[in-house]
Length: 151
Image 1 (cartoon, rainbow, N blue to C red):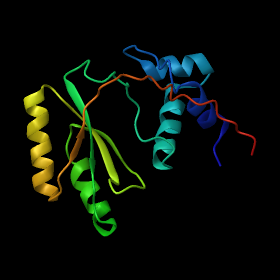
Image 2 (image 1 turned 135 degrees about the horizontal axis):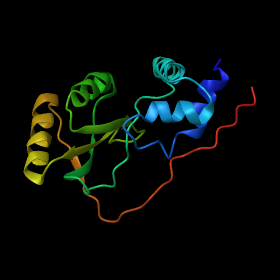
Image 3 (image 1 turned 180 degrees about the horizontal axis):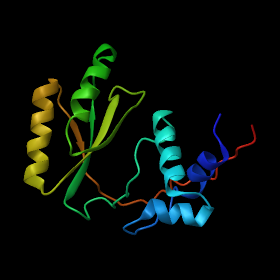
């Protein structure tokens, strides 16, 4: 069961996260809590897997270059292949899909030659080829959700 501070942090700071040298202090001041209370609540939310990271969403190919990739991986190897992929700092996120191509991930690199090198290394280390899905049209999807906390 989440406490009121955790619920407020999850609901109110999905977007418009303060861009300042002291964002957690700014959040604390805006909601009447201490910075340490905010940090403790966020740490607990991370531990409980309610959040995985706090960071910006940068539009594709605005900083360096990026690409969506997919792999077809036997179910029994999916976890181990995902773990290999997650070791690369260029991996933005990955996820499983119910499809022949069941492991999807996004790579972000400083330039196209670095991106190609990382793809080659991932294919070599995992033993699986990737399907490359370069961005053809840009779509914006607002990923903020108004959370209903009626327990």
